[in-house]
Amino acid sequence: MSVSSLLRLLPLHRQYVRWFEVLHPLHPLRFKDEVFHIQRHIKTVGDSMSSKMQDLQSTANDVGNVAGKSLANQLQLLDGQSKVMVGQSNLYNFQA
Picture 1 (spheres, rainbow, N blue to C red):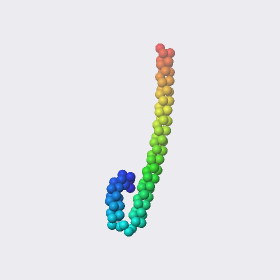
Picture 2 (picture 1 turned 90 degrees about the horizontal axis):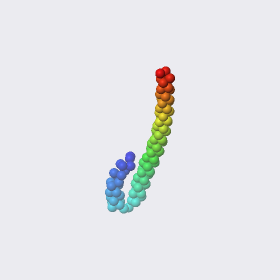
Picture 3 (picture 1 turned 180 degrees about the horizontal axis):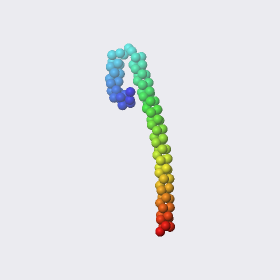
Picture 4 (picture 1 turned 30 degrees about the horizontal axis):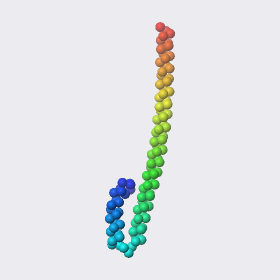
């Protein structure tokens, strides 16, 4: 269940808490169990989101590294092409 789903359920949970307090004042342990269950679920969702965000950051770092290498290779290629053009120009001038 996503965090947005949990947030949408919050008003419903508040109503449930009010209903429980009014109709079941003799069962505070059931209420505590429900709160514990919800807190545990929120922690699970948070841990899952944290793990996915770490994976996403790792992937973003990998993409950045590959893009950096690609840029370095493109610069090296342009430098080589520039040298070829100078060489061709020198050859043309020599032959002329």
